[in-house]
Image (cartoon, rainbow, N blue to C red):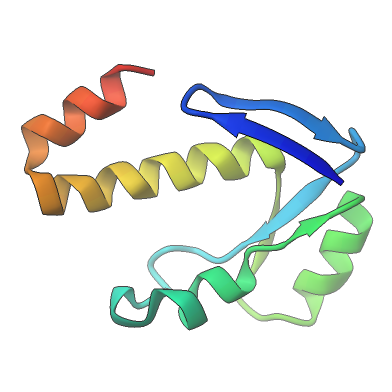
Length: 96
């Protein structure tokens, strides 16, 4: 698989059928983000493969790679708002 992304979003995904799994952020614990969120975010060659995996992993769901990027961007902006203050996070988010 090939995935290229930058601050403005996903610029290339190969194969074009790729999808990814996600875990709702409200299920995750920021005290243990790796095992409660990151361990459930995977790339798959097809949506069908992602759906098979999410069927075995409660609370997960399937999104396109572009949707996953947007979810991650919004979550990151929220974290930056807490760390840097709302004005700074808004400025970071508005540069997109």
